[in-house]
Image (cartoon, rainbow over all chains, first blue to last red; front, side):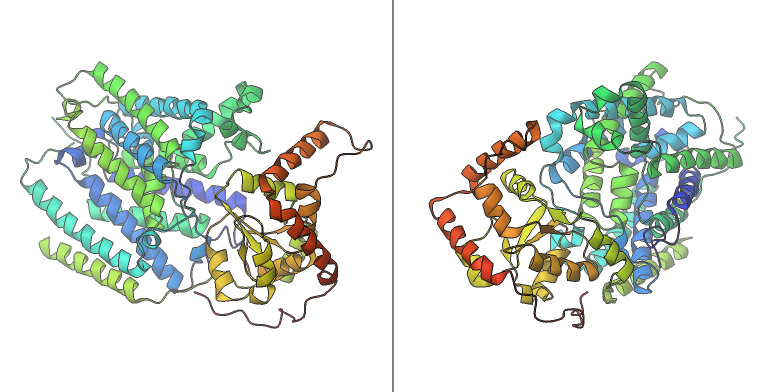
Length: 196
Length: 172
Length: 212
């Protein structure tokens, strides 16, 4: 039963090995999808290329359903999965700042590494910027500490905070996502197709 | 102009495969993917080697430097090394390996460079504040149905849409 | 091409619907192996001192909870700030399960002394709960160290000891109200008669309720 590390089926050393393999898979798929070019990535925000939206949500829903079914079949212990800790204000503000970064830079850290791998120089500059930005936050941490830890809600699940059952949330999310896929396809069909 | 590169993979197929990679990550390591943590690991290692005593005064550094193993011994760091290799592999197979500085025809290369650096700074800062970037917090966070994942995802995309109008000259 | 997408959309919606109607399943192993439990018992990491608890309460740390395992009437007379009451006899109840499932970092059990709280810890630990701790010395130690700290005598010197004493004085100010000292004195008297008891039922043979 998974997760293999938490159940002691693999050692921490093997875990690092698999981290590498998983990373290769991640980078490979990202590049195959065209996430190695900034002009395709920002298309979502200007309405000419919705690939980011499609890949992102398809991936999230695939993994989400995968986890639910694996848990049901007893292949994984879902309580041992790392769940992100919610600190509301910093999640929102940090997210908004990242949004600005996305528009300015045209990348996110994962895709920038992928793009730099195939030689995109703008991605390399982006990565340099990420280092600087993180460094700035670390240095400012003593000042921002209170905000950083504000409104601790623990490892709360989204459906818990909405007061609904897991299954209901998932089906609603899927319906909304499929609807959005249809709408975005329609929007794209109205545009001149540009290949990046 | 001859275009030797293969076409990109269909988005839904890529999304499905990415979802499988993500699922594998949960199944094997009990955690989702990440990216911004790798840069953090490098910074921590640098701080450790260069300015350890003064860095330890900062509680953020202290948390990472007070362990007795190297900061580079981090799951995300090793994973991102894999991302690099994976990208190269895919680019090689598709004939897309080429040094290029991409930018909209409406701006100069210089502008693009500055914007890329600035974008990275914003992203790095925001990612560590929100405790994750699009890969770690948003994508993986949504897959494990955490509130933080959805909130971060909405904030990133919402923020990007808000700032999109201001940055339009950069792209269209 | 269109048909393919329609089929995929329908497929994913059907999968979502199946996920919707699937019952929730808890695969987490209910019981901790004896060897692991033994190992955890020998380590002293589950113990939290009164100083640490005082600090957590004063700093209004949001990530901990105090669980008072004494009887309800004793709880009503006096309890630590923000503590909740779950009697020893109720520790396997749904109420305790619900409380322990929330992702607080620390659930700190306390009683008059250490014994009963520690026994509760063993049971809960065996059931697989991770974030359970024990206040070393219980309310007895609380009275002795926080509400009525002793001046360090000549044998114990050093900065750390002095700082600890000063902290305890300040904590005493924070926690004392007029009625407290009298009440705790009374509780302390009862302590002598209570703490000698060993727990009645053998919780090992009780099967925990099915949780999901």
